[in-house]
Image (cartoon, rainbow, N blue to C red; front, side, top):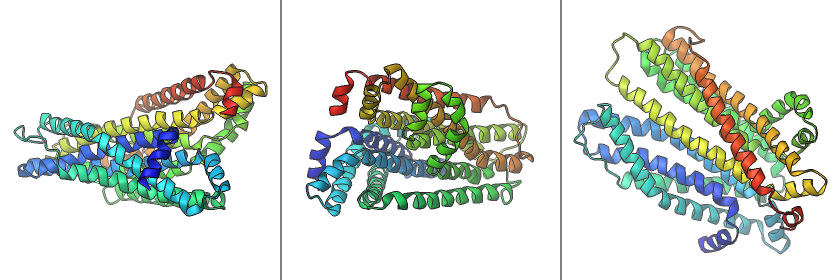
Length: 432
């Protein structure tokens, strides 16, 4: 199975590049946090506690986000190969054979990505230990260790996540009525994640009220779960935003009409939403804590949590930002044939590029607004529990910066990829 998958990937590698990058980055992050557990085995009690806390919280958040990223990119990669699967079915390939091929490819990609991620995970693990030492949370005499826990977690989580995602994707691909089944299951999953996020938000505002910095434990999780839930509703959210902004988009003429009539890139909304939601929620939560803690005696682990928040939001934000660009490039490159057909029908290169830019506006607006809603699951209950007011006394500048980064990443990835895709004669692209 693996040999056949590797041979197929060698001839048609493009569709799984996005999956490889997501698995690689995810494995590197998981290995980095898991290496703290290797380091903790020979540390003193205080250092051990800081290392284990950072590994557990940071690794847990990364685990959820990485699993979601690998699943979404793998689904996108498989969906882009509908024509290939149809051809294989026409020459006699059975459903089980197609499923084994998809699973084999996913396993091969996961193993390769995990192996390549080892040196990166080792380096990031050392950076985490150095950061904890520089802030006085870990003794300076402790040497970073990259051992079996890091390797086992990196390979095990990446392989298991890819395998589960591949099996689920393969079943949907082989099912004749997958278009009717998938929205229902996706919406059920979205509702479940939103309920979990709402429950964490409620716990933060009630049970954790007056518990000080400890309220971050549930507040941070609320925003992440809510962001994942809203990301699963990306197609519905994108249709809603498109309906509202449709009259404005049509003012741009032919590019606007093409943008509204073309395919909905809902898969691109997911990373924008995750990026905006997680970054905004964590930054404002830490800002509320910093203002509430001014002049007060803080517990010994307060510095640990502050460092942990910024480390986690930094690493996760970088990961989601790369996933955003990765997904957009993969989705746009796959549309080469569509762009060529539009040009043969009379559209100019400028009009096609304008269409992609307007699609980027719809994607960005949907993702940024969805991320803002997800961040409120963290910010509002934490503000109530920590500062005694639901709406925090905070500047919108931080959210503006996060939104601006999302706009720049989305626009640059979409427009630049579209311009490269439009090079060459349209007839050659249609025949490809």
